[in-house]
Image (tube, rainbow, N blue to C red; front, top):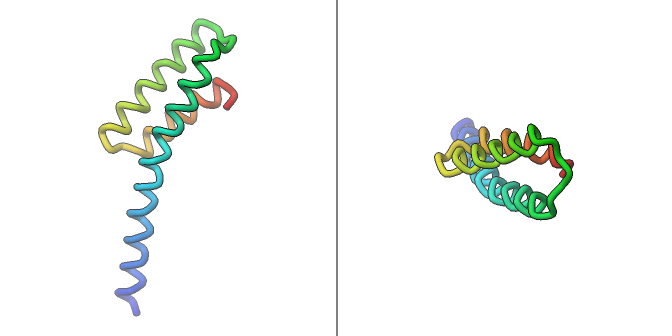
Length: 81
């Protein structure tokens, strides 16, 4: 019984990492789509969004999906999406 709980926990943990991995590209696309509409942003916010977007992609490619989701979420917040 104890082994099956441990196995179930490990499976769920692995699945959450996969879910985050697939979330990153959707966030990047949403940011890119919003940027394509030329939103009204201050120069500082525009630069910050572009940096966060680039950092998010770099984290995603490095397998650091928690970090990717975090920085892409910050960019989405600035863009209001």
